[in-house]
Length: 412
Image (cartoon, rainbow, N blue to C red; front, side, top):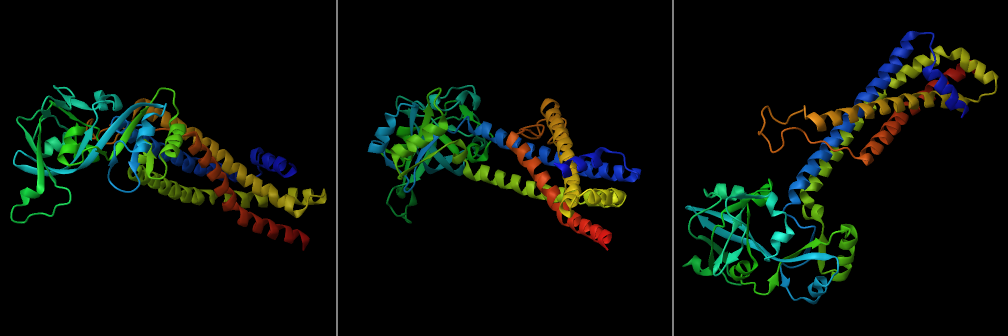
């Protein structure tokens, strides 16, 4: 308490040399700029993460049940039957998904056929992702319809509505390719256009997926009575985290229950790694900026030599004197951190309101025109703690050594 009181007085009191005040201000300013950069950069990473997640929520279910091993399981498996009776599930959608070859407009493309139950329109927010003058329909009488991703339709040279049947081919289960007549090794079927395509602005879906009926997928892939996954929509008021744990315990180790972020683990993992690397680089810049504090403390020690002699005469020991200048450096870091966080929050607010930092030179160049920003309280806490830790590390050894040298001179 004694050391902190003296350090605070030294920080805000007028020095005999005005240069010390200027250098202290520059030191705090350097820390503030580095801190501001950390706040803005991490908030932009958060913004991109949430922006990407907002598109996934239109297509990916709240929870998805997949097999840990194998590709498919019987739809009437006892574990899945028990899941149907779980009270927290509002919509239970069976899915069979596999790859096939599509031929259209003299072009061929390997696609993912996703066969879904008739209740899929209650599972996904289709109104947010469908484009065209038709309507979402999976089958009618003897016809099966295929809703393809918008980029897939472009690659095949098709529009939202294509004329005639679209041939689909899939290799037969357990058969080797007949080199004399390869087509005999494939089962085939046809899909028709409902007049709409979907767009979630993610290449994984828009360029490779076709939504169709579950019966068509089972027939094409010879998978009668099987599912490759189950998609769940929870009832209103049910907490997703609790439901995920309970369903996982209900199904056992054969199955894995994934939330939306876990369904896109690779994408969000890469974004998290990029954010962490940016944090490390900015922390290094912060460390370099903190070294300016050493110059300020060196001049302060010279300026306060008479005070140090007085304090020692009054009974202050060497440890207390050293702690005074350490706390002085820490206070400069703390003030710089507070100013930097405030400026960072101001810039983030202005960007959220006005979007003055654009991604492209003209509107429409990218999916989003301005850099998205999202401020997280945990990031602010980590940044503030990092600044204080880096500031303490930067001045610890130099201040201890300079203080020891100065005190040894008095002893001699």
